[in-house]
Length: 331
Image (cartoon, rainbow, N blue to C red; front, side, top):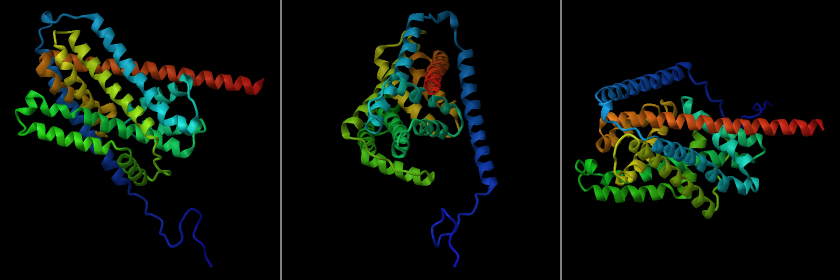
């Protein structure tokens, strides 16, 4: 009597190999979409910067410095997101534990496909002995929370003048979207969606729900991150022109929308082109098209430099930890 090979359930047929042409077609479509976005957004930004009269632009370095600090603080809040979600599985965690986990996988966003940063985080968590359930739960939960929080915080844009003029009953849409966001952010709904995604990706494990207090703490840190990102956008705009503080809420909503849509655009590494296009459309009415284009480029530059610097800190901590472990083994 024959037995099914190890790893196959009895009575099940092995799934046929995926045709290679599908993967090649998918990659080609993503490259074409990325090229199209970069072309149209790049053309618009070049035209707008070319029309800018730089003699009327008054650069204020102090606001740029504050914007850099705001972006660094926004990335620093990732530690505050990880801590409440991880500590039930790993015990109390310090800066040397959280910094590499928070800042090194961020570089994975710059790899097409968007899953590399999550996979990197899972690998790092498993490498430090984190239980498999937590190693899978925490990165997926953080990713889902970040996307949903960004879309939720963008909802007030429906009440923004240029949008309200084109959408009838905008206030009703705002209330409806806020309610939908609250439902989607409910831990049980998010866990169910995460488990569905894991099954589709053929990943082992299930999303384990944290306590309500820890969930709320992580979600609060994500909203703080978006608020700091929006503040950085306003500060960079203020460094070039006089823009009212009343635009800060719009900048926060724009940052949330750009971050979430940029992440969902799987063809764009780190949302390249997509984020810029969204920010350009929303910021232009406040500061003018030319200044908006410069600000959007500055936002990308500041974020990339800050993320690279923090990743360097994370790698340095990992290197020091590996060196200390080697010394202890040889002692």
